[in-house]
Figure 1: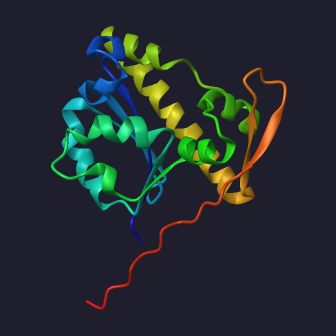
Figure 2: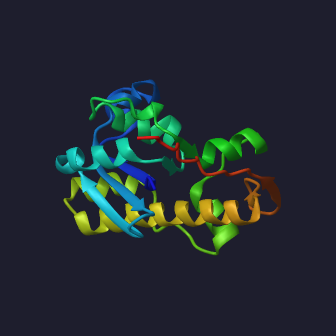
Length: 188
């Protein structure tokens, strides 16, 4: 069975550094965190090891994450000679936004549905990279991967996630239909 991956990436720089959000593809990757279902394993890949990650991504039956369609995959795509954005993917934020009508942060979702929270903010990851604090960067990124995986699994199991309003005073039950891609049987 093809592996399913949950990914999250951190960058070396900010939108301000590259001239705005329309220059998304000019951001540089510092670290990619990955959860591989077949191995039940969290791992990370620094920029100098992204070539090792390529075959995993290319062979995955599904790549899931939080905002991967509009951030992670476009940023990461320039590192490969295949189109990451054409691979089977599930973007939890995109699915919630389509049903709920608004974006919501990973931290708010994790607090509401898992009773867990992020260890920091994306700008912390850029600071960790600048300070060469790889341990903190890896911990931060892999925690985001684990939270995303746990939210994905919860949504798949119960068919919904609770989405808090901006003030955190009220939640809305957002129904999500998550179906795993089927393996194509080969006659050869």
